[in-house]
Amino acid sequence: MRQLVGLLGVLRQHKTPPELACVPRPDTAFYTRYRQIHDLHLANDPDHARHARCEDEEELQELAEQGLLFDVQARGTWAGLLAAEPNHPHGIQGVTVIELLLDHPYRGLGYGKHLSTLLAKALPMPDQTCLMGTIHADNPTAYRSALRAGRLDVRGEIRIPL
Image (cartoon, one colour):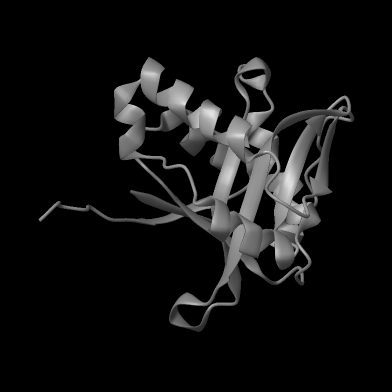
């Protein structure tokens, strides 16, 4: 696992394509489609379960109520989901990425590298807040996208199942 971090103020300076937008999500009406996207990932790549999981609907609803759940739109059409939750590890003011997800028709178009920027711009926190998140070593596409967005690789860890 790699830990990637970026200051919201720095991430917010990056440009995003004009066809992409991030819109606050008040509910979990998308949840069935969200679940289908994860199920399709697992059908295409069973190892996907090692580095990603489908979030619980109740947890996503809590984030929506806090203003921390967002739709990604491409040309006004639902294209994915972004979510973060407040977190203060070791006294650091920050938010942890819970979800950066693009639906399959929007993958491979270069949008992934803009998801951290879209999330940073949408989050209602000060510029000095850290956007943190772990990315599994078996997910090089997500790792490269986070680096391109301006997040920095600050540490790694190995998780050994008991």
